[in-house]
Image (tube, rainbow, N blue to C red; front, side, top):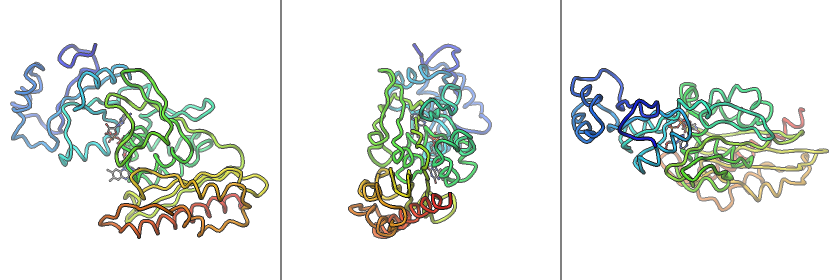
Length: 336
Ligand SMILES: Cc1cc2nc3c(=O)[nH]c(=O)nc-3n(C[C@H](O)[C@H](O)[C@H](O)COP(=O)(O)OP(=O)(O)OC[C@H]3O[C@@H](n4cnc5c(N)ncnc54)[C@H](O)[C@@H]3O)c2cc1C
């Protein structure tokens, strides 16, 4: 059993949630027995902290992480790259009693080709963007990666973090949905596999249970004759997209044999453009009306409006990016 209060086990190492020098009172709090946790938390009040104080656990195996999450209860969260979680903690938009750091779990890192392409949850965006297997077998992932934030964010952010965070404007969830990826998770009841189509349930919401950890994502490999594209519109380089689209076209003899189109930033989750996919399937490449296909993709969508753009504006952009993505994939097919 993982005990939150004792022992030198690696997953039980503790640090307080801040940077900088420890003051004497903070240092005392840091070394105090865990039974005094409430006192320690009080002793930090008045310190120059950005996030609310939290306990820090650093497991080295998935089993330890799951156990720590299960024992510590709902006020505990995994932390991966920290690129979404840390800003929210620092702004005190959220607070947790404890964070379970996944960074020391080596088994969660890496890309392997075994039928599908299986990418460990702790594989960082920058590694996905430069991986030879990804480039050859899931090129859509390589195409979207440079569009995620800035390089500092891509150096730390992880695939599992992006998938679990489930931002509706994020690129990786849209790729997972479009390609029919499978999310592997482990919780107190053991491992399970979840289709991307069932995984994203709302803005920043997934079907993960509180003590479940995403361990990997498996991406199907599309066959020969497949072409991929991403298009998005963002106010500035590095911003989340106002609206974006990813697409995959598999061609044979000048006709579309198989199509996948997903939009992001236009709903509470990434969405598949099923009617556009149906219209594409079987069509001759030469006859494709990209503008019409773009409009078809946003039919029925009511994107949330905000200070960056009204609902109508986002729907318009959605149609534009679908049209552009399909055109780009088709051009690539034509150019060989
Ligand atoms: C300025 C800025 C711009 C950005 N722009 C973009 C962008 O354009 N596109 C984009 O897609 N993203 C963008 N991001 C987000 C970035 O890609 C994050 O890295 C990503 O969303 C979360 O990954 P992470 O590893 O940092 O997760 P963390 O921040 O560590 O965690 C995020 C959430 O996921 C949970 N979590 C993490 N890993 C797991 C796991 N294995 N199992 C279960 N739960 C887990 C955490 O508990 C937390 O709730 C941006 C971030 C910033 C700060």
